[in-house]
Amino acid sequence: MENTKFFEKPQEGQPWDVAIIGSGPSAFSAAVYSTRGAASTLILGGANWGGQLMLTTDVDNYPGFPEGIQGPELVAKMRAQAERFDAEFKAEDVVSVDFSSNPFKLKTDAGEYSANAVIIGTGAGTHWLGVPGEEKLRGRGVSSCAPCDAPFFKEKRVVVVGGGDSAMEEALVLTKYATSVTIIHRRDAFRASQAMQQKVLANKKINVIWNSEVTEFVGGDKLEKVIVKDKDGKAAELPAEGAFVAIGHVPATEIFKGQVELDEKGYVKRYEKDGYKMATSKEGVFVAGDVHDFHYRQAVTAAGFGCMAGMEALKHLDKEPPNY
Image 1 (cartoon, one colour):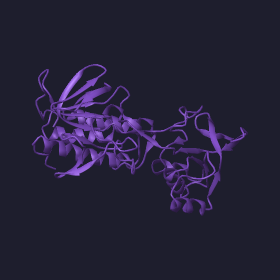
Image 2 (cartoon, helix red, strand yellow):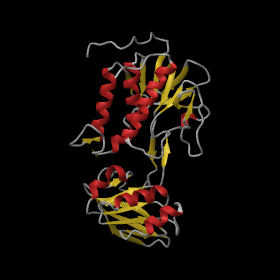
Image 3 (cartoon, rainbow, N blue to C red):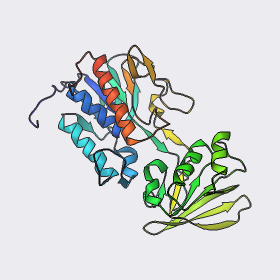
Image 4 (tube, rainbow, N blue to C red):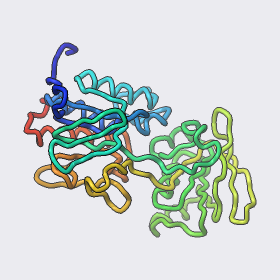
């Protein structure tokens, strides 16, 4: 297998068949499928490549790893698999794109490229609080994904920061594992739907601290407590082994404004048309992963969307998908 040549790389100045922007599960999954379908594939992964998995310690919910795996190790394996099939990876940041004509043009901080099909897999980042201790303790008690990390907080005290549906969902998931869940919200009422609020307020494991904000996360190798300040400026310490920030996500779509349609939250709009499931408003440009999916936000679903986008790029190029 190692000696198999899947495609001819384009000559200098010639377009790639597929250019993939991003470097998480969706991007690498798309590359595995596009390369095995004999499409020359360029991955523009960014200087800080790897996405959210680079901030995750133990990953226990990705199939194929019964003992679990570290997030950075998992994404490194994904990259190695894509490169095994001859995908060209460049740790360059895309600074602008031009989808007005084909081949599409992509400019990075180090060069310019063109491609006959593009897959957007840039993901979305957590909207963090930006308070002291938060960055240091990410993956050490501070998280943004209860479905991913809740089992690690069995019989522990946790807090959730936020007041929307996402915060309610995080809190409810955590009640299945934690001894207590405290929601800290900066207002005197939640923004979440009434149905979600009722579920949360009726749960005896959940306590709410209103009109307050987390101003600091405190701990050495792991989170020990959070500092909470109320609207009058009075600070209090709240012991906690886990803290989940749920104040929203920010899709990485700035460079795509005016090139493909985005929704009101800035996510790429995904269209199902002409037999495609992962199309954007621009023919030949596809999307995969958290950059359009604000509901599931899981590595395994991102990889699935990447598979679909990779196969649809092959269809667009009129190439046969790999036979599995």
